[in-house]
Amino acid sequence: MKNIIRKKNVNPFGVSRVDNPFQDHVDLKTLFSNQFTRLKSIIDEISDDKNHQSKGVIIAGEPGAGKTHLIMRLAKDLINSNRILFIRQPNNPEAIFYHIYARVVESLIQKVPNTPYTQIEYLLAKSFSKIFIDDVLKQKKPLPKMLAMKQMLEKDHLNLLRRLGNADNDEKRLKNWRAIEKRTLEWWGSTHGWGFGATVVRALVKYCSYPDFSRREIVRKWLIGLELSKYEIRKTDLENRDEKISTEEFALEAIAVLGRLSIQDEPLILVFDQLEGLKYNEELLMKFGENIKELFTHIPNCVIIFNFFPDRWEEYSNIFDESIVQRMSKDIIALNTPSKKEMMDLLNFRAKTYNIDISKIISREDFIIILQGISIRNVLNNASDYYKFRKEGIPLPQKIKNPAGFDNKLIEEIDNLKQQISWIRQYLNIEALSDSEQKEMTEINVILKAYEENATNDYEKYLIVSDSDDTGKVNIIVKTLMDDNLIDTSKTRMGRKKLPEHVMLKDINNKNIVIGFLHIDGKSFSSRIKNFNSVVWENPNTMFYIFRDKRAPKIHSKKSLNEIKWLNSSDNGNLRTLHKEDRIRFEVIYKIITDIQNRELDINIESAIKVIKHLYNDFWLLKLIDS
Image (cartoon, rainbow, N blue to C red):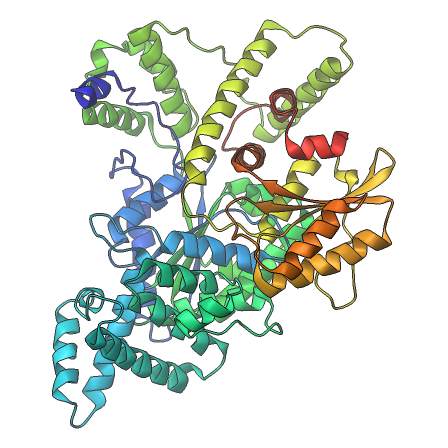
């Protein structure tokens, strides 16, 4: 009964954006059907290419044009055959490959709809099955049990996961998986050599072979580049990677392994979204372009999709090396603003999905105004406002329309000047906030609460928390909320000795502050905090703070615990735990800033900063800077 009531009261236009392609929103498939068909044909071309050369695709559209929505449609249509890998904007120029790899892993553990299996299980089951079948076909006199397994896998490659034994100590299962591992590694060695990639392949085989969740978690830990304990090594027979192999090298090689394995399956689909904010960090933008070029060189069998605003892609293409531009934009798919008829079809389709006759709620005159929106998102937001107005009596929001004939860039410059003037007035208390400004502050407060709810839900999900990613977030938050000049781009050095990932903020109340992150454990934690403590000792006039996520493994090593004790007893150092609320606020602020930069959120950045500073005045990063 509750579900029926909720469905009757639902606003069919209430959701106007897709955050990632694994969501499920109403989709009118006639909209951008030609672009969708073309996109699928590019994937087919890679499948048919004997060399399996990766291709780049630019999907160009204004904010709210439906770029991520189109990828959601692609995911729904192809996720049973192709792997959809969604990558948000990187934030640390020194860890772009790891950022990409971490998002790839997060995507791979997404469940394939209506199945108990994840994307990575689909990819590995298909790849390992095909390798095994091809190997048996090459044998002159294969053993009966090999032929039986071949027939089983030919019938359904998912039988690799279903029917090789049911328990971790099942001898039949162990023998079967040893055979799979042996033939897979032999194939890999003869095809790609016996480098570090073979170690990654071995770990992937083990990941599939363990029905026991705890062992899988150990392998997953290894696969995301974390150090294993002696107990975990004994449990899985894996070895920690050589320290000579950097995290970035590991990440690139691991992605390459997935690409090479996918040749036995179907092309991977890598989607880079929300890249507009790169323009605010020139070093990050340039490094991103260089790394993307390496991706095309090292990773086969991929279609690599980049979602861009048309003017932003034009700007980046004038900055990137021509060789990068050519690889990224092998194909360009434009999402132009749909016609008013197509927009109306979309509104009717959404309403019918919820058994709502919108002609009885919204008038023709209302629709004339609604359809004046310049994008799909604008039209949906307009429709949502009028639906709430007519159905529930909620007043329409005040909107300022751009004068006809004005150039968008000129309007943007004018808006920026208005925002700066407004901010200066507020800062100097020249005049009280106007009614419209007070309303804007209230709206931002509501948005902030919605972001908190999403971040709270995400906190319980499996997400890869990395030191480099958190460092990048601090950089962006400080540059936006405080002052770009506070950040010292030169890092603290100790020769070849490794320190925790960190940011130095200079001249904060006549002192410098170092903010670092150390979510790793094992020997890496021990050595890095020891090195960090040496720097703390040598720089008594600088304050040093290390943050460790509450969800990170508990530290047991006496050596590490002693180093933590020393740091916390020092006059200028401290290790602090990022508790749930700390993490949620950290993620909310970062997400709001990047969404505004990427024009996913259409609010005044200065007003957002004012609300954030007011509501989050006890936020740990703000408190450190203000202390």
